[in-house]
Image (tube, rainbow over all chains, first blue to last red; front, side, top):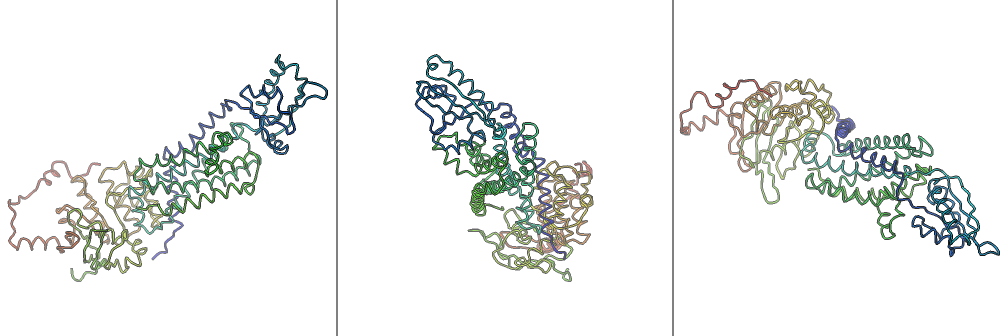
Length: 358
Length: 254
């Protein structure tokens, strides 16, 4: 009897599954169309509802009318209690849009206002500038403010796309991993496709691995597509070019493997296909909203932040942004990778228990 | 028939579910190169028995040898020499027939030309069609095609003709007979006694998980007649199905 070839069987499955995914409208919509639409919308929206984060230089006078006026505009958030070094970093990345330093002039009742802008956040700096000018010419304030000194430091330009794209990429991986895997295994089980497979000499591991290869392959092609469109059409920042892309794809692979674990669990607990979307949404929606896909989790109320910090997508998004925009290597995001790994171990431990073959 | 060699032997097979005995002490042999029919009402244990022989289900007790391999220890070897058509099984979604045959070729580790397999079951014109788009008869012929990929010694067909029109049914009988004539042993289940009578070399009647009769269709009928059985109505030289076939034509339209 000929020796049976497990690798050949696994690859045959991967090929079949990949063909099937490519022809499945829902997979293509979830993986590519949704993220691209969001990128498009946010890419052109350019971040409406602007907040300007202004750091207060340590040692600055805080009980002065200038700061009071700025806070009253409702648009400016003053950030205090951080060290000079922290602020410098934030300023360079554009996480803080400008720094302000107010001092009472020596031998005078008037104040001297020192503002530092960053090129990483030019447009918001511009808004702050006009706000300050208004403040400066405000009659009630005029006598007390003697001068505004302005300067700009150069930082990397941080665009909306640099925040939105990694989040969308993460969400694309989450939905293709969870929905795709759950639907496929449930339907293969229910239509007895898996049972028919079991009548062939194929191993169970080949079925799971073959399916996994196809889904990872599909997700990576999707990720590459999103990154390239983002880069060439919306100016998404890739600090080290191709090397950054490779790092992002490695992160994407880790992410999709973890998220597929959710899919395996859902395919095991769902009784029929109509139960897949609600259960999948329980997994994906909170991460969609709370994992920093659209907004930085720092914008959430403090009671919500621990929940955000418990979700795996948070760490994938975080790692993606650090790698893409800050140019970090994979070793620099080892903490995020470790959390993903822990999630992976936990999820697959559950998946092995609840997964059903028939 | 006594000189024939058994390719499947089932000895005292028992299958218990939690509080229900599906198969209780079945024993029978299937000879090489015959069409063997398992007949009986729904729930009699036909499918369970087949699936245990196919290594898809565990048995509670008993012994099964398929072409010298034991289902307990050599399931992997058995899978390589059998072809299985399941009742109501689906196929991988979004793939056409050629791609599905390629997939199964990979799963069996067989080097075959998909078109040749499709020609065997007369589906070469449907090579690029999806399984879902096929008619009932075409679906069954395709299912049978997937059982032939590994050039098996035995194929198992679980109710292959259920729900088919008379033409498609007769067409499938021809196909199954061809497969037998090419040297493959066929094990089939069916609810249609005319089918079993025409198609099967030997049949076993299964009732409540036990075999209540096993012989050639001819012998079973002769035995009944010799016991003094008579049909209430004199049999005519043709039946309504003959009328149907005569009126609508032999060829299948799908």
